[in-house]
Amino acid sequence: MNNHEYYMRLALRLAQKGRGFVSPNPLVGALIVKDGQIIGRGYHQRYGDHHAEINALQDADKNVTGATLYVTLEPCCHEGKTPPCVDSILKHKIKRVIIGALDSNPLVSCQGINYLQSKGIEVITGILEQECRKLNEVFFHYMETGLPFVTLKYAQTLDGRIATATGQSKWISSPAALKFTHRLRAEHDAILVGSGTVLQDDPELTVRHVRGHNPLRVIVDKKLEIPLQAKIFAVTAQAKTLIATTKKADNHQFKLFQDSGAEIITVDTDKHGNVDLKKLLMILAGRKISSVLVEGGAKIITSVLRDNLANRLITIISPKILGEGISAVGDLHITSLDSAKKLSIQKIRKIGCDIMIDSRLT
Image (cartoon, rainbow, N blue to C red; front, side):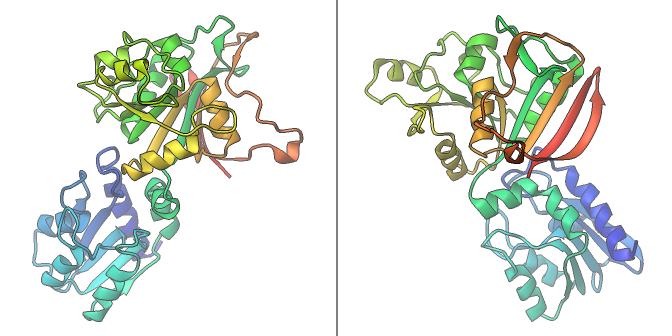
């Protein structure tokens, strides 16, 4: 491993510290190196605050003139919630900038590099580029497709059931897996479930077991069937709730739901007469929701897979067998093995007594 890769790996570790706090901004880490020593470290800590480069400059314990800046993502060159980072780099007379990945944001996209080079600063790009892009897979997907990055997560028994034949699902997985799920929620901008999950489990859909922010709770309820006594309406002060329905605004039930403190939106239907999930995702993207965690139930899980809307699949497998019960995934209209959904497994680990498989849809 050369020096550039060594310092970039350190910057990547720093960037991880911002997970769950910077969205819809990317995770970014930065190091300032002079005379073979790290003299400044920084990462983007929370949305709206200083970027990683600025934090590293402020952290420097020596004069940074002539130093090298390592940063996992191309420095910004536009005015946003904070001033352009390239201006601070110039002001502090950084000699060289080493970049992991280019920024897909059209407001940046090579403009930061071009600006720095036009001012005489040496720029090197593509150091651990794949690792830097992987770190921000949510950000890059959001910028490049205009849609949120969708993580589909469910817990099932060893024989593929997410509930008993009578609908009982609490708790298939272990307390450790529940805590993992809450941490996963805190890393997403929104969590999405169907009305059946609310009717059957009456969840709060919060992150009460871990430190972090509560995501926007999105309930897909085409007929507005969930009761106004549900727990999601009791904790609207802690977490915002959006109900996606197909009902019209002049419907009496629609108005009752509006008075509950939740936001109600009407979404077009798909060919099955259900809420069109892709159109719903487009609406969420327009609200700067860059990541959505889908937790079910079976109908929503099946729709997301059938319509190719999932990017990541997290399956928690509990060492239990139910036999008859509710399957995690329903009919995807697949009639040959060649048409099966293909997965690239990224990680397998034990959580409590359960096994977690983290994969990507290919």
